[in-house]
Image 1: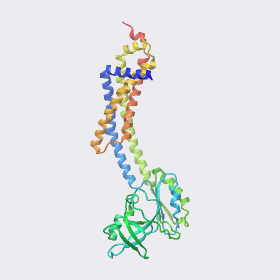
Image 2: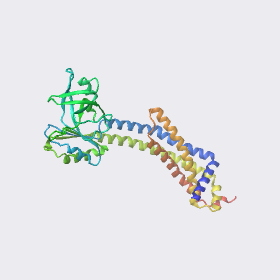
Image 3: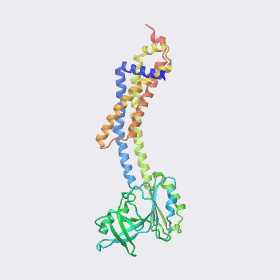
Image 4: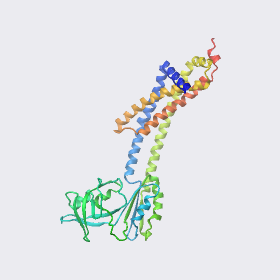
Length: 366
């Protein structure tokens, strides 16, 4: 540890003793970081926005439907599907029943659905719980029923009445619920069935395997009446878009890093050549070849770290100004790390040249 600390201190002294070379190295690394962030960084931001819009269309959703009402899917299927690997959440809905607002003859009907399973975060109930005989109303359904507030009573055609105890707001892929009311399952219902099951998987790549596994878990009375709608096509489009944008970004980053590596290498080689007597004296005084390589590389890394910090700050500011959003933190950290690694790699060949020079010939006085 003492040897390592001494090496770092000596490397810093060497860098301070050669301000021109250190400044050039720092500026090259800063320029590499700034250029990558201001160019490829915009591509990363655009990729994130495009993929976000595709995801909004439901690239991770699977919908099971009883196409004609005779499939006979029981509520237990929801619990079985929830245990599948890759499933983020699953919720089932019973058949829809039209209801009217009690005492408001001019109101339009809206559908009420029983919910089986736990409502996901996409459905905001503001902490209100549903019990038997109560319902929550969606914003569109509230307007259709003619309810001034999210409270009151609604009556179905068969005479069943429900108490409206609150409101919920749903977003995609469950945004369609806003046009209806949701209720807790009726504990007195005999042999209840599901009409639809909505599943959200963890990743777009999980859509196909989860959809294939669902068939065996439904235990439907009439499997021919079961329809499974997936977002596999959207997932493939997402994968293609991500691959194309990512390929372009990787190529650009590789080219910029390669240019920076060459420039840093040439600068370090020039510094090593002008300081050959200094390295010769160190070798004559007992420094090993490994010490010389470590000294040059450590000096370069220390200067590159400062340059990377300045470059990422400048590039991040440019991205923020152009796009209105801060750059991706992980991408920014990766760019800085790659720039420092590229500088360290570029310093190794010149360091080896300095380490393998014969100190006697270097120090010989003509």
